[in-house]
Amino acid sequence: MARRSGEETRALLLRVGMQMLLERGVSAGVQHIRLQDVLRRAGLTTGAAYRLWADQTDYQRDLSVAMVRLRLSAPTDYARSAVESLIAAGASGDDVIRAAAASHVRSAALDSDDPDDVADGQSFLVALALRTTSHTWPELREASRERHRESIAAFAEFYQFLMDAYGLRMKSPLRIEDFTEAMAAMGEGFAIRALEGIAHPTYEATADDDVPEGPWSLFALGVRALVNEFMVPIDADDAPGR
Image (cartoon, rainbow, N blue to C red; front, side):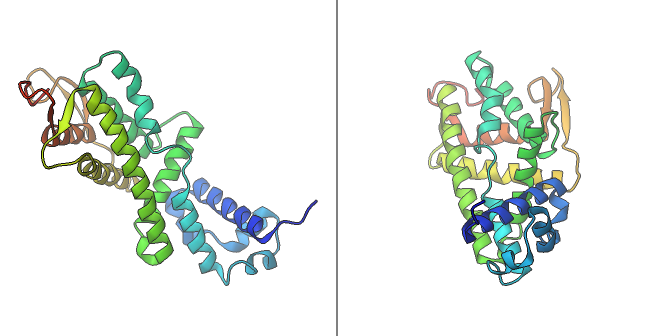
């Protein structure tokens, strides 16, 4: 068997460390991923690691950066899969909002029978938890900002697709990026609540309530409020609450 290069060994040890993070979940924290345990699982000796990192802290820094950069799916995959068939069927905007919000709530709660969905949700939550500690290392801060920029760009495109589908435009002087930033702040905030074990509030609105009838999550109601405050119909004669 050909001998691994230093870069191949580095990639292997980071990959094993990320797998251990995903298995143990957010509560483990990168500080609990010991380099000795990673080496043992990878079947390598101590010398293989210490030719690459000065100490365990150096390894944990690079592991944090690699984990924040890891994406098991594109940023908007869950939301798109939740709403595309609804849009094609001519569903109402409220139904689209509820479905997209529900997909985010389930992902943050790891509420799925599909192992791939759970792994994807776990990856998102671990990366989110690491991003809250991005002040620890400059490299982690930059990786966190890069991930945020990528997500904002992807979701801005997705939201523009939804606006086009429902004949909406941004209220002046707001931009689609402003709406996307507000959505990201709210979505990540609810995800952090899920990390804390706080159940997501849900409601069953009736015909007597002030919101459209049917099941609503608090996140969905927040999205609906943002849509109504940030957007108007392209046709100025349409009612703002379209």
